[in-house]
Length: 239
Image (cartoon, rainbow, N blue to C red; front, side, top):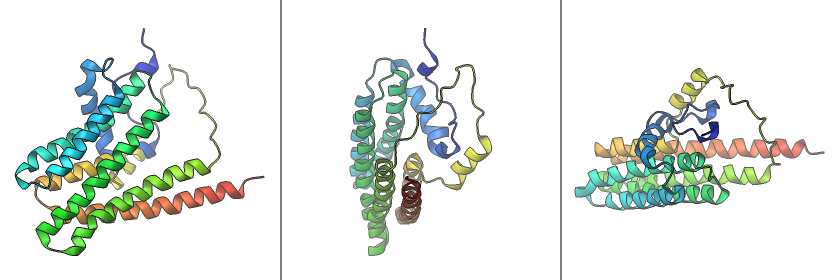
């Protein structure tokens, strides 16, 4: 008999900070539907590899204007696979540090390739060198976020494990705060893919490049300051 930990269909996050607009309302539900028939058989690491293949292929195909629909479809599929691998690992009780590392590495490769290519497309559209640089700048901002997050995690003392919660007790869903987080900052990982697919379908590459650059540099700066404050506070509290 399946326990609570083996639930398949995604629930709303219990932590408001984890509410991501596209992931919460689009990609996680669609991924659950897509993989429901094979949820007990398919390997999470294989799905991560498929996410990498679809993401890299989609990014490269953007360089060929006649293949834009295929490119955007592959990027959207890569987003679904990126959410599905974690769902599969949790359902099959196969979560691991290696799997998490593989998943995050794929994200770095996927966006690190995609954003500079969007800069190339923005240059084709506008002829502006500044627009061309917006793509790599967006990738830089995204990398700063990831790097500071994991660097802080390595520098901080280990957190105490969360207290066990009875399976019969379901936490209240933080609708107000969660929706505020999702709506006020629609530039999380899956959100970025949706921006790419939506504005790419309209051919608005220059606008897309600047939206990505401004949002990710702002997020990178905020992450750097917040993580530095977090580490300094932990250092000050050491005996």
